[in-house]
Image 1: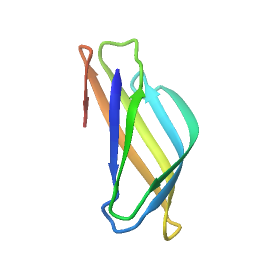
Image 2: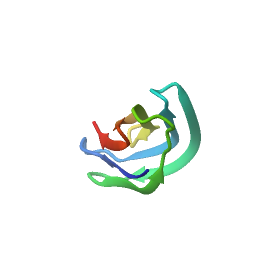
Image 3: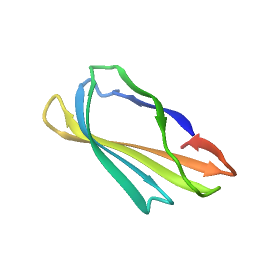
Image 4: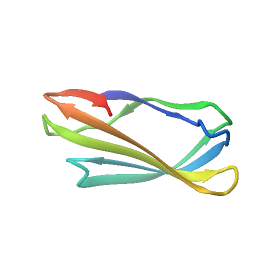
Length: 91
């Protein structure tokens, strides 16, 4: 299924994200990759046309990004996608 993931920076700080992780099969099977995303001050990061796949008609898919904000504090962004009868929705 094609999805659009949207992350908003609401705290007044920018952030650089360096690691991504997607888990399927109720978060039991995961894949990680290095990324280089920058969320500027009070902006939104949209990841368009990303695809995840599950063999299950009902599943919980988790998407996460790790990085640091402009003050050097670690940040973790997390989204959950619930799949029910082949229909996906963000929590």
